[in-house]
Image (cartoon, rainbow, N blue to C red; front, side, top):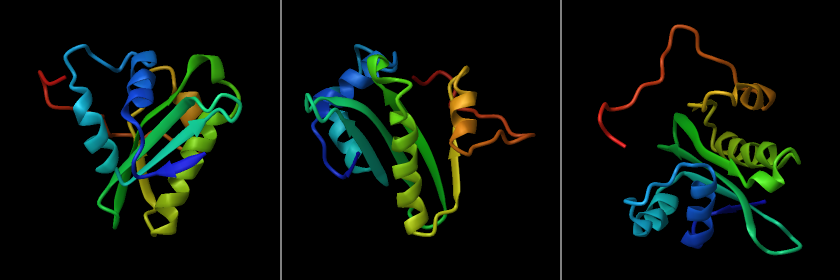
Amino acid sequence: MRVVSDYPTIPIVRLYELGGWWRDYYDRAHVGPMLRGSYAVAVAVDPASGGTVGMGRVISDGASDAYIQDVIVEPAYRRRGIGRRIVSALLECCRADGILWVGVVSEPGSERFWEGVGFSSLPGHTAMRLAGEE
């Protein structure tokens, strides 16, 4: 597992594509600044092939709250603990700087994974985003 500040764009775009999160009209040039602007980025690399097989990142001001997002593991590598190790590395970065409130907006069906790494739902709260934006 690598916690990185700069990482090649192409393997990250590929992971977003595998997760169904990439749209044809997205600009690949934004991926580098997105990664560099993140508080922490963890990338999982297959030691045998050297290929990128997973990633996740944290967005935070570095002082109070943090949000984990974009945790994705290539389908062929799932159920091997890679996602758990990505989240663990990201949480360790947060804890090292005293950030104890960490949130995540999970995709439907992934609740069991997030509960397994220590997260729970926030009763009375609803995740929202700006309407009409992609």
